[in-house]
Image (cartoon, rainbow, N blue to C red):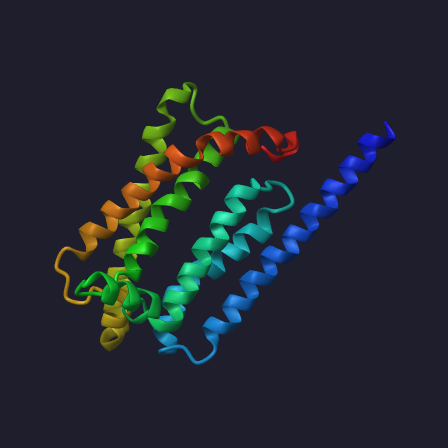
Length: 218
């Protein structure tokens, strides 16, 4: 049984290293994002969800640890938010480069954010629904996950509207519509595509990681 004990210890050390790496990347990007952003009111509005996610993960880490896949996706989404908060979504250099290369008319970095807004919550919703045994029949899982992601996307659009109304002159920087009249609808459509893509691409890998979680995690 010694080999089993050593295996468990090795895996635990590996997870600890990954935890520190995750936190190190998060804090490094957050510090960079907060250093002389485009403007601080917009920065707070854009980055606040990433900060809230960190607090939520810290609170739930002990009694409801997530799969490594979901932790990684949350980190990627947080980085997208923090980069957008630093420059504002309409002025992210990567979006400018893609626009110039493709001959487009607008900086579409915000669309990457809304695609992630469906992609990442899809795996989060899937994990919670499965681990808490919410559904009696697995066949309903896709419908519930996609519906949750669409509802989340719609609610986020309402939050953007309310926050922009309060921000006044800073509304354009926060919303980043760049004159596109169908911006809200396209944002929700991309969230829908992101949710479906996540389920198609990651369901099997997610199931394997869920099977390896300790029983106390669910």
